[in-house]
Every structure is written in structure tokens, then in C-alpha cells.
Image (cartoon, rainbow, N blue to C red; front, side):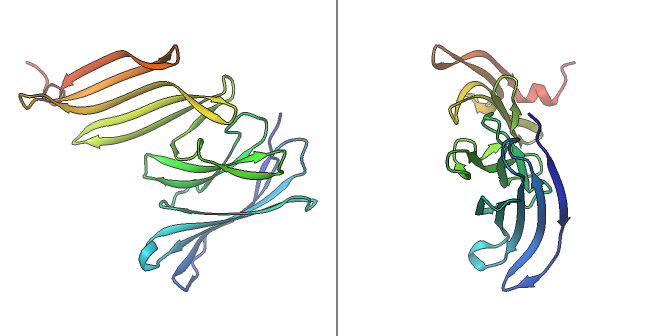
Length: 221
């Protein structure tokens, strides 16, 4: 199955009025599925400067098919202004492209809120299971999604990497690898790495490593 995404207008403008600044405006012609007419999807993002919503990003998404048989509007808010404002992906591997709007994160970690196309309702429906996953990678070969998030303790990377199996529009965690900082009774601090996999319906530790943080900063002589 082939998907077609054509960006026909993409530009950034600054119009300050009533404490709202339009920062992004993109119109796309998208083939959601080969059996459907082409979709025209306009995505606008505005920065809000209200006292209670300082720097919050407000999304307005206007959706319609070229034959005007389908019309829909999506609104959302975000804590992050990113180059990748939106994401068209088949996140549940049903053969229909879905819409993701950037939600939160930083320069290394970006998550999206996703609206999945529902062929029975002929509209995009918000799905909390697929939303707020950091840096998602969609693997259509085995219907899995991989996620990765990282932060730092001093100069040490602390991370979490997960792999999910997509089952009936929900996610089943099948593998997880993460690190954490741990201190013992003697005051020593360790970087702990753990890997878990799903075995007989339960997540079980299959690999564990603990390193003294001092040994990671200084080489033994």
C-alpha cells in the first residue's frame, strides 16, 4: 500500500494579536488510504501568552477530503514548539495513516498526541494509548513500537527504552530497558541498568548491571 503526502504550503509567520502569535501554518494533501479520496489537512500552531498559559502552543487542525465527503476539526495544546510539529504515521498498522501533534519534551525527547483514523466513523479519534510516547518508531514488519527517552544525572545518561506490541488499538509492553541512580547504606552511588522482557504474561528481569559512579568518572590505574 502506498501513501502520498504532498506539502503544498508551509510557512511561519508572526502576527501578534490578543496575546496569541501564529507561528506555524502548513497545508498538506495526504493519502490516508488508497481506498479513500485525498485529504486536505491544514495545521495551524499559535503561541499563547496569557498569564495562565505562558508559551503554550495551541493547535487547530482543519481536515477535509477533496470531494468534501469528510470534514473534521481537531484542537489541542502543547508544551513544546518543535520543528516536527506533526506526524503522519500508521501507528496501529491498520493500513490508514493517523495524525500526531507534538505534545511535550525537549531537544532529545519528543512525544505526540495521536488521533487514529476510524474507518467506521470516518474520522480521526484521539487515542490515549498511543499518545505521549517519546520518540516513537513504528515497525510495520512486526507491528511493534519502540520508544526512547533520556535525561542526565551529572554527566551520566539516564534512559528508558521500551518496545510495545500493537494489539487491537492498544499497546502491550513486551520489552523494557532502563537505567537509574541508586545509593546504598554506605553512601556509595551506583548507575543501575535493567532489562526486562515479557515472559508468560509478566515482565521479568533478564539482565541487570550496577556500576559505581566513581568508577565511571575515573579510570583505574
